[in-house]
Image 1 (cartoon, one colour):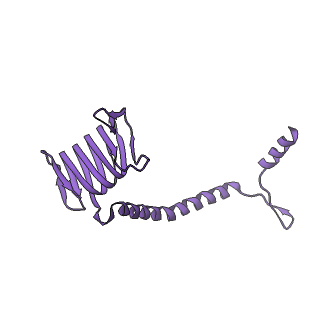
Image 2 (cartoon, one colour):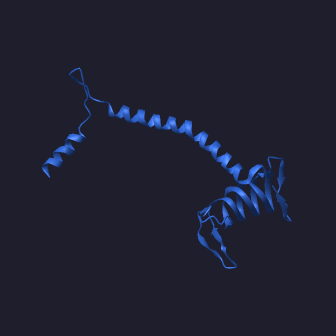
Image 3 (spheres, helix red, strand yellow):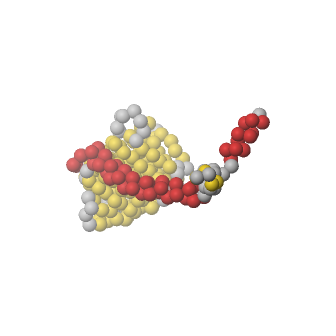
Length: 187
């Protein structure tokens, strides 16, 4: 026990390299800062490449038929697509159905006060909350949002139904208002 304690104490001492027979103490704080700076620099150079790669992968999943939707408002937004969708809702219900049949879950719901399977269709997961729900889905899916503070972005091939109040941009076009009577669009 004593020898392991002595070894531990020896390891805890400052690193003291010897240069030309002169003991020079290492500045561990500066080395730590240098290491953190190096990691941040590496991440800064790498992350844009990852983001570009994810866009390429997304485009690959729905091919040249990808469209886009950016919607904010209050009401109902149901999207059936092949690609990706992400966003949030400040209060209400989010339903998701994975249609990929690839053996793993390609969606995420966080912030649910109440989460359960839809009794009318067990393949649909329902998330309800009086606070913010964050959602995402990829590959092939159906996602329904009903409530207030809806903010959704989609890059996919498919269609959507929208009803309520707010605004949306379809395929990067001019802003449109949510139809109060509901309407189906494709992208």
